[in-house]
Image 1 (cartoon, rainbow, N blue to C red):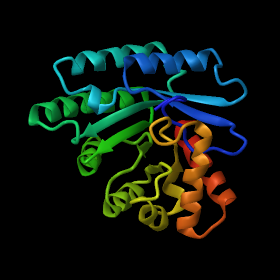
Image 2: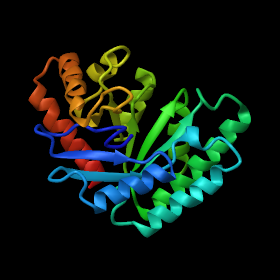
Image 3: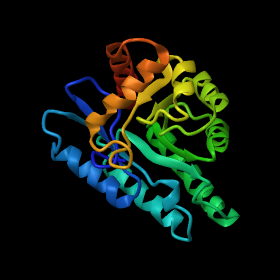
Length: 232
């Protein structure tokens, strides 16, 4: 998820966007785009990470080493470590899941060392992601990107003061958007997989507003503020 693969909720007209890495190549690209002011007057946040679907084979820890090097060389430009996490849809064997957990654990440790927040990719593994973060007593901010867990898991995330980021999909998301306090919600596009451009975040904002029965502008301002607070 980057400016081509994602965008989080921000004030309109677009004033900020998140360009998030999911492997070494996209992480380097995110950093280069931030350094090069590729977004013009739009503030660009960049995150560096390796998605769990990239960390299922024997090269998983090598990928972690690459991500570590990118972060250490670009500490100021890396606003968060992510996306990282667990994906038990694609990790359909115990060996794949073991490698995902090893990579996730190492990247949580990296985020703690650098005192950076994390952006979590979790699919069919939300409870496990929560457990692993709890075990490390992680305290630098957490966003669950493209939240796909249960309402109970969403409540557990909010109870910890973490953010739940919702894409512009109403099926299965309206209940979470309605039940979770706005203080713990963010909006995203996951473009181009769901939304097509960062501005499609407006669809997610409207979905949250409709679920809560409140105005678009109130949700827009608060989800923007929540994301900016996380990323600094």
